[in-house]
Structures are given as structure tokens and as C-alpha cells.
Length: 318
Length: 249
Image (cartoon, rainbow over all chains, first blue to last red; front, side, top):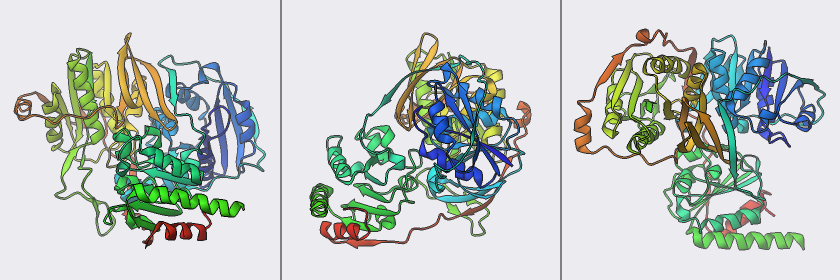
């Protein structure tokens, strides 16, 4: 079987979710190619040739792909889809937006957000906000899949020797166009690939109080997350949301502060290696998944935690 | 402008579902059902567009067992003008839903379809994008703000990097994210009024679509459980544990 992975990138670097998607593709196909689409993206294609297990990197460059919309990317994927029996993308907002459009045009029933490949036609995925794990079997000749990146190891980024093949890009559809992006500039690590994540919930109480979460994150060199309740309340921006309808994270250390642990939040972080919960409510469900639970007032515990971590760091440095 | 709003009847998101003992499915017997929360946001947005004079008619549509009529009554009570029920006992999957919605769009000729970005039962996040693809329309997914400007829709989308603003030509399909609006509760007079609003009842065959699922769900199980951890008594103990584990310091 052969598979095509649609690479996610920011025109400078591949998104690490792409590497996990390659691993999922390798689990069902012997031959895996990668599509790198954009405007002046050869450096990304050159980075991609190193990915272990990738046969070819299809390089698709056009001015209208500088800030691509799903309509135009879909036409491109269809143009190169050829005989690939599987088409995959990460289950990020990029892949979620694009792949169902591709699947419908190919008359394929897409399988979203897979967490395991059991056989080339059988996969596992969660339903009901992570409450139920299902095994799903497709009878379609082709598969269109989105892949939960935290469920697969990242493919080796170096050591491969793929060849770059330039492919033609269909003209712009003119249906949609990019206007602008409102990105919260941050020096902190990216949430989905960070080694440590500190998240705040409704218990943090206000946008101003979230600075406490930010200080803890900075002393740990962590990315910042938030529960849906905190984002809905306006304490934190939407791109910080961890959970079934936000981002799925699996860092080495996840620190949940003032988060009760609604199932939809747990679905987004329960694969973290070590979970710490700080909450004043001893009955909060977050404690059922926490490796280390501290029942305490976060406004007392977090400043103390910051101070003591700084002390440990000073002692280590000395 | 005419707006079509597809709504799905799902298990109330506050109810924890049970898996049947033999792993053959989820036991929905006697569970409280509700309109998919993302679809409620879609209904609210369409009604607000009507209230702002941007839309002249809001048509709700639902596909599923005959009890989807209850869900459609909710949409009508919120303010939709009329409704279409496509009745089938089959648990219809996204691609087939998109095909049926396409047939309804061809009958109804709306200028805009607004629907939830995903249903909270199967969490597929596919149908809106598939419908746009089948119609050859533009799509604006995960919307947190919608404005109609110069015959186009300008939509702020919640993406992993932050907010992305795009312009799409109309007609288009827009899918809603959580923070687009806060849906209203239907008032009692509006609930009474909704009972008199017209509901068309169709079948998949009327729309020329075979509703049979293409994906076979063979097994349903509890997610792997994490081992319960320990309670630490103080910040000092917590720091000690984290240093031991080598994650800080």
C-alpha cells in the first residue's frame, strides 16, 4: 500500500505533528510520500527529505498557497492523490479543516483523529469526548485519515533520503481568501510539543490572575494551557485550550492549576507522563488522574511553588 | 438571505454514557437527549442574523430517528421559521449526512449553511467540510465571529495558532466553534408558538441517498485508566517528588 501525508508547516519549519503522522502512515503503508505545499517552501521540503521512512517529497509551490485556504489545498491534494490508497494529515485544525473536504470529493468515509492503526483497514479512535474507545473498520478502497499526533511516536527527522519531486499546482478556486492572522506572540514553547505544560482553569478566577500561571510556566520553561471554562470566561485565549475540542497534549509534566477536571479536559491531557493537580476541592475529578495531587488554595500554593522551584534551580546552578 | 441550519440530536453532553457489557455499542436507553451544543450555537447565530435583518428565513433540518422532531421543535422555539426532518432508523455517518444535506440545499437554495463544527457523540468534525466539498462551495470552519461584508462572509476562525480571519464567497458553509455566541433559552410562549410552525417530513429515499454506514464500528471499550497517584501534603513534598522524577531542576 502507498500513502500520502499532507505536511503541516509554517513555511519555515515542519510542524512536529507531521512526524507523528508519518509514523501512522508507515504503520499501514510500505511507501509513504509527503506533500509540502506553499509559496517558496523548498527549505521545508529539504527538511522533509531527512524524515526516516519517507520515499518522496512532493513539492507544490504557488503564490496562492502562501496562506492557503482549504478549497485550494483540496484541489491540490486531489490532483496528486493518484493511486495512493491512504491520505493522511495531522488532526490539528489544519488537517481537520482540509481532509473531510478531500474525503467527500473522493467519496471516502473519513476516519478522524485515529490513535492506533490495528490493521491497514482497522483503526482506533475516541468518541463521546474521550469516554469511549472504539475500533472502526473501513470497507472503502481508500482511506482518508486524520491522526492524533500525541498517540504516535515522531518519525526520525534525520537520516532519511527522500527525493524531492516538483508537482504542478491547480489554479486558485477563488472561493475563499486569507485576510489576516491574530497570533499571540510568545517566547514560550508551543503547547502541543512542549516538554512541560502549566494549565489554568476556572479556579484561577480572572485574566489578571492568569499572570500567576504565566509566572509558574516561565520558571518551569513550560507552555501555557487553559481549560475550556477558563477560555469561555475570557481568562485565556482560545489557542491555549486543552481538551477534546481544543488541543491534545502529552508532555512529560502537566501541571493543572484550579482545574476541576471535566472529562472533556481530561481527554486532552490524560496521556501526559506526570500529572500534577493543585485544587482546593479535594473531590475534584482531576485528582483521579493526577500522579501528585495537592489540595490547597492555588493563590498560596502557586507563589510558594514558584519560589521553591527557583530555589532548586539556584542550588543546581551553584 | 436564507439560512439552513442542520442540527443533530445527541446524548446530553452532561450525561456520562455507558458501554454495553458485550462491547457492542453505547447504551443509549433512557438517556437524556439534547441538541448538539455546537448546533445550538449555529441556530442562535442564524436567528441573530435574522434579527439584524441580514436573513429573511431560517430553516432547521435534522436527520435521524423520528424523535429528531423534538430537537427541531427546540430550534423552532429558539426562533427558526420552519423545519425539515429526514427520518431514518439508520445511525447515519458524516458522508451520508453531507449527501442528504446537499440534496436539501438543492431544494431549498439557501445562501448560507451554518452548522456545528462537530457532534459531541461521534466527534468526527467532518460534515460541514464534506457538504461544502459536495456543493463546490467555500467553507469557513471553527467560526468565532461572522460578518457579512460586500456579499461575502468574513469569518474569524479558531485555529491552533490563534485566530485566522478569512473571507468566503456566498453561498458558503460555516461551522461554529464554542465562542461564537451564547445560545438563548426558548421562552414558554415561543415554545408554544413553535408547535404551530411547519415541519416537512422526508426520508433518505426522497433525497436519493442510501443512508447505510460505510464505517463499521466493531468494538467499544473503556479508555485505558491511569493509575491513581498520591496526595502530597505540602508544596515542599511536591517539589521533592518532581525533583526525584527529574522533571525540574
